[in-house]
Length: 228
Length: 359
Image 1: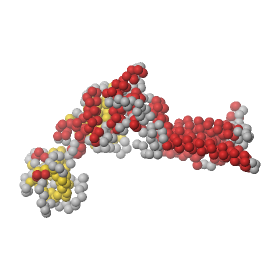
Image 2 (image 1 turned 90 degrees about the vertical axis):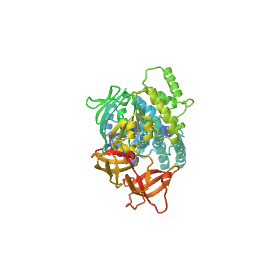
Image 3 (image 1 turned 90 degrees about the horizontal axis):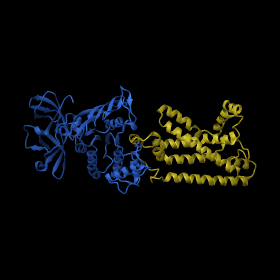
Image 4 (image 1 turned 135 degrees about the horizontal axis):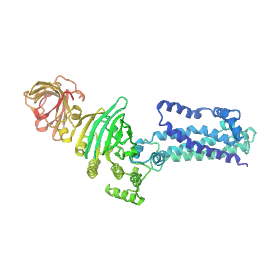
């Protein structure tokens, strides 16, 4: 059995989760501070990939990155590289689709952050960088971990946009989800079933991890209970 | 050591406009919730920037709108104790106190020594490795105070320090806080809506109402003769009536419909009953006012009477209506008998506080 799709899916999901982790936290942190109107507009734009069909996301990625587009054409001319139909394209597609999950959970975490902690830290002379990494992030840790795990899971299960921008090239861009479809299409039911089971196991483990992090955190508080 | 503050801030529907000075003492900002007390502390500490004015602490300008000075909270070196203490939940007691010395140019060992010292001073022995969530409310407050004191603040500000505590803990913590304030020696500001707390802790009191300074004075004179309606309410006066001048020795209490003997001038606006037990008169006479008893509540050594004017037939007291009174009468004075639902309240000169009309 060729395990390339597993390896490919995992590297795509892990890379996407890393990208989305930083991008999501960055956007969540700064959007939460913006004036209401701009915040509302940006919020819609940044959440759109969550509700759009993945094919629409794939369409937009193609519009921006295909060799016939401005950016894709420029990449072709300058570096002689094509992004579309490579596994990088799948990373981009997965990142776009998973981004809103990270962004929204992180923003929720930042918004529930007790601002008096920040204020008291400032009056104690602690720098804003120190406050962000040593106080805000640990406080919001739970939401951020949950968001990361969810983003990873979403990226792992991405099909629509990935199929459009990376296609199915065995040994190059094939992921678990595109492999399942391909095997089923070619009447290899047994092969498809194997990959379905692998996918089920990974997803179950990930969801168990989400539940674990949501249930308890280092301070022994329940995340579901209202904190003041 | 001193504070010189004059700030204005428009908060949309609410304007903070305050001028206050304090020396080496405890200044209290007394006011109902939402009057701008906490906002004032936030302006001093730099969390909120006033629209205009100046804030000078110990000769150092923290904020001056004309000179364009606005130091960051980190540069101000002020100590602010938050209502919820704002301990960092992910850090132990030791780490929390250590955070108060983050910018200090001293060795790690010396920091550790100072932390140990603070833990001793604030009775936190054995709790150094605990997280804030594992501590009681009183212990949390002590950690927060230790963290502030270790940072050597230029000014100490306490925002409703006891509001998060059970009443039986309050007394103990208040005694501790008094000790801290005594040792501190600099300028301290305490924000509270509790008159007893304020009286015991502070030296001078600024009464705040609707974002403004209503009045200012040393605590004894302010509690004895509050000059304004707001200050009278906040220092425990409950029964008010609008009053008009009759002659130099007589005033008329409008809502109570009574003529009372008291030195008066034309500037009189209101009178209030001092919060002390009153006497009842056998009949109508000088300095009496007749009221209907809506409710008599039996206490251990006095009777609380809810009174209203004779023509008011309602039994539901309205706190905003001056024709309702709640007074205490000594038990031996109050002998109710059947059918007697009226009393003659004896209000003599010593029971009356006069509030001027323009306040």
